[in-house]
Length: 308
Length: 244
Image (tube, rainbow over all chains, first blue to last red; front, side, top):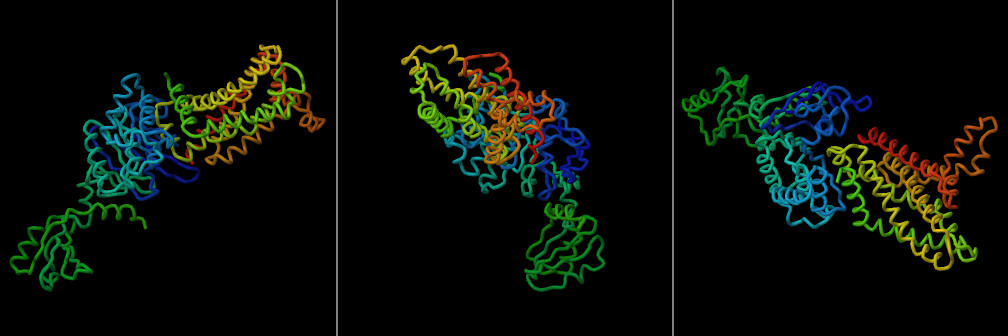
């Protein structure tokens, strides 16, 4: 379990992380979201023990990262932002070095390295120096390094940044695979990733938590939640029919496609039933009809720009 | 092997996977030859000792050692690997000492490869080999002193070139500190013990006696304490500066 208690990190006068508190338990894949500069990376650097907190505490399975750093760090696998590694080493030498530092000895070193090489598919570049690898492979070397000791806690700072769609898919599948009995925290600003891998998402802005919940709960906060999208075959005045119908907030017409409408629900109440009955009664010329789940992007924007 | 050994081994291996180690060793040997035979008058002196060889070492180290030391921490900061290293279950002291020992081992290897000159002097005459061993040891410890300064300077910047210049400047200060040029520049009103303290910090003061074969334990102790102090300073600087 990761317990973060009133964590604050200041750089001179600038407060990067402001009184952050949350816990993450086994089996959770936490998506750590926020605009650039919101404090995601700083938080991760404090959790992993790279930076000391200004105040507050971080505990990994009961070990405080400031007072028992070695014990806490032994439980964590960390992929720093940009996946740094020793560029003049070959992939194999680098992974063997990590295995040794992680406490493997003798034959276990090679066994463990072979295992992670299979896991992240690095066999092709084993004898190449890391400097010569493509961005995708470098990222995978970083991941291999992070999962070397089968850590209980996996902290990944933008694990799919800069990867092509196939590689992203691969890395996400890998994270889902690893996540079963672990705690995974990934930071990202790619919102589709949250739906793809996370069981929980925290959105932070200016160092504070502005939203915390499952991806579905967060989507429910979207103004588009429960909204009904309709495409008509010919022009028709939908707004007139929908006036004074309960639970319906208003109707928006798409600016580009004049035949596409979005009917927004007031207070996230289900309106599908009402609208579909009305469509039958009034015989709307409908070609498409579906209910929105709400969009994370929408919630993200509203909670991180709320102050502006 | 413990973490200290693992880190040291990795660092040393990486010197030899890049041309750095080879260039360092080759230039070190060439410069040693030039200094000893041309400027030191090794043959002309007609004496079976290695004094001309060792007496140039402080000046040789002044430029060679900072070149190895400059990358120690600056490169880690520049490439971001410091974040990797510092989040592994490794103590800061192990990392600082491991890196230092690897660089020190490299200077040791370079120094050992000057063995032909030892063979030469034994072939030509009958030198006191005890003195030579003592001088080698002293020279290696002095290189360690230079390196420890370099480690601290390298920790203070992410730019290796700045680290190099800072290291050369500070090393120069310590080399000449015991010499009359510096001591005479001290104002008269300074108490004598301050002047003595400065004089005692000079590398030349300690190295001169060692290279003449006077292996005083205090001289070795001086370099050992000097190295430790600068390595501790390195650890403090890394702790403060690693965030930026």
